[in-house]
Length: 204
Image (cartoon, rainbow, N blue to C red; front, side, top):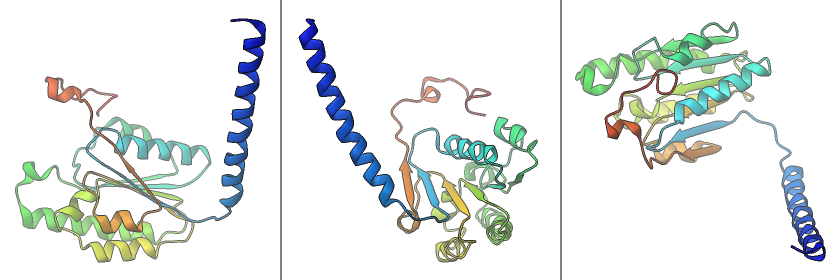
């Protein structure tokens, strides 16, 4: 490439970046609100809970206080729980008894979910908690174990600067409509379908 061509390319790049910076700066200037956010991580792809726990790490790095409530999951040997339970600014609740195909008991699953939501209501009333993760909450909503109207009302009336992240497949439309940010994880390829077990540090 000749020197003049390199110079022209560099100039075009500089102009593109200048235009992009103007657009980004204008968007940042318009974003002048402060509020507690409701975020939903849904979809069939892997990474919904992992993303939420990444936000837990970020919040702790800022000295914030975090509450975690795990629906469905009944195990207490995951890597994220082993790590985050050691942090003094984290409250952690495992509220489930396992997946529905394990329990096979509708009345028991409903009772477990409702008992768990009573604990979450206390978290949502606590102004000292800056971030709450409701891991796999979409399943109790999808199966009708929890009343969506009650859940949305409790979320709406939480402390104004409290952030909440909800994870799980099949997030109800009403929850997505109420959310400030909704992210859908796509399932393109998964090792499980090739017969590979869940791996510690990756899946557990």
